[in-house]
Length: 288
Length: 282
Image (cartoon, rainbow over all chains, first blue to last red; front, side):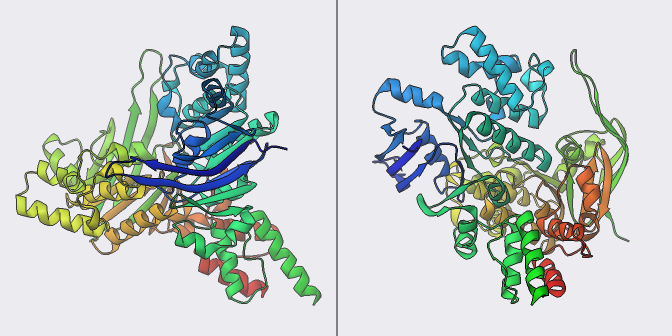
């Protein structure tokens, strides 16, 4: 099957022909399958934001291609516009972009622009609000009267209401408390499951991508440094540290256990696996 | 006798409501204090009152009842306002909202310029502040072209250049990548250890809070737990009930205890945690 998104030899140069000319992306290639949850990690300035802007046609490649279901997203104007609706992008701190008088109108803004019927818009607004857990009675409130976490969810609902097949989120949990962050991740997974949507999430929290993503893409200096399952990627702790990233704290504990001479998997990246790895280790050694 | 950097006595505060919005009572008779020279981390869910409390520390907000003093100055004393603001510097979450100049060193010089400090002294302070945050080589750069971590360090330098006795940081690493977080946390720790600046750090990152001398957990405008990081984080169930998390190290030991082990929950660092597991398992 054709991957839903393919990035082929993508290069992007900012300020070409000026003294500030800077290669933000260099020869990036990867593909993303339908229904996947992909985490993108990389230090600030590694090209993450530039990359995701390409995925919904906010930035145009200096060279290379972005393919949506096998077709170049820039092949003609109508297709580009269509891709922008099919690939929804939630920016960092999306609550700063709330602007309508009511939460309802704000969520309805995207679907309205798609030219949908009033009934369909209403259905989508209510469904999107449901995904992110905004109660019915909050829909007529001003978005500015909501709490920080609720505002964030309302803003995400605004993108979800367009029912994109690919949902891209740039640090969706930044600045939220752990419980609020976890709730948003649950919302995103609920949406993914219900529509078999593809999710691409940029995050600075290694623990978070470890918990959510099927696959990780690691960017460094505008190029792909690593790509693979969290297990594969987090087994390269040293390389990750060198490029300004990290591994989850529990992975560091296991690395240290290994140095101390225990034969455990050094790429354990969540608490659940850590506990079962240790229980198994105990079992094996008790039998011996 | 140790002096208090910040002392909060019987604080009452409410955000006044409007036509459609109800009044929100944040604090009722809250007592809290910070020793001079200490490094205190404040944790709590969004809306628990952390930031509201922080804004009382340099008179951005004033108590509606009770008293807040910083270095023995009452924050409601208008004549002391300038001195209070000089004493307690604030750093916020979003570096983009805190940077005003087109050149890094001018931005850092902004506060001392406003304090009417002589030119040579400003020069010295700016150089020193940039040195402390490790940004000297960027002094002639444009701030908007820097990374988030770099911008946040510039914002911190701008505060340090005022030579405050206390710095209050409200989620300074929320927008940063792991390296930016490390840089900023390293800078904060150095300010506390080497420059003896009192630090109040509001954060959602449990691993960052674990670096402080003292951790205070807030819930609904009250203090839920207060003690050393080890004392606070070993109360895993209590923190979970307040819908907070603990560092992964503590979480791992806690989960192992659920499986019949008997680990003490005060092994916070990766090394301590690994050693504790090694002793039991190997």
